[in-house]
Length: 346
Image (tube, rainbow, N blue to C red; front, side, top):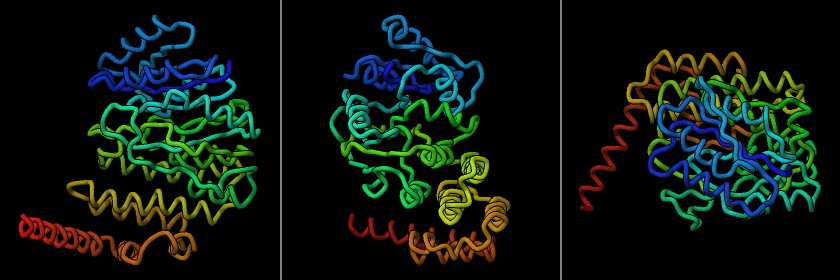
């Protein structure tokens, strides 16, 4: 079998989300493939829909049920355990794929000898095959036969996992899997996975449709999800050490950690959680001081973030309390200016 497409599913029955995703996968132009949809203990009719598709397309659709919620990473792992395809791809159950997405990526692999191939995606807010806002993913200087310089770039920016196909023999050889029972598992898995492949190519087309809606993970910031991001930052470093790929790319992993664990979490927490707690702000500061006390000197950190972001981070590292008060006053002041501007224009 040429390809296995693994789809983790949790409570996606409403608004035609799940059916639209599955229809896009059932109608792929590539021959000889399977869709493995893993229901992650849904409480709606999602599994019934999966069973319906399995009955209609028994030669290429398999419905798997997990009786406990292991989140997206755990559901993907269950799919990997039974995948039969030479290649493996992942799709989120509220997104969908262009009809020729997998045919084009695998054709690229066969033409170039690559063991991982990606594409671009677009963002849409309705169920459509019209290309939405283009989101380029990965860059030309990351592709080709992978060497030290390309691996460095991939540690810091591995790109999304749902717009790639991976050669399964590499996955199996290194027993690559996802963190389970947590959010943001891709943030940990993606760079670790990419450092195990040897040749990365890309189809320069937006073949994947990322559906933006109110229940998307990215739109629902909570303290729990910020805690999960911290956990995935720590897990990233642990996995890099376990696989023996940490030391050659220490500076790059330091930057990846400071971006995932620290900067993204710090500002997402302050902007997304209604009542940010000083205890959590201290936890973030203590965590990065313990792992990478000199992260602010990292050349990638210096180049990635603007002067205001670095100033706020420095304030937070010195005094989480002062940072919290200052940040809240800053947001209040800027929101007031925006309201006054809107009122004046209206």
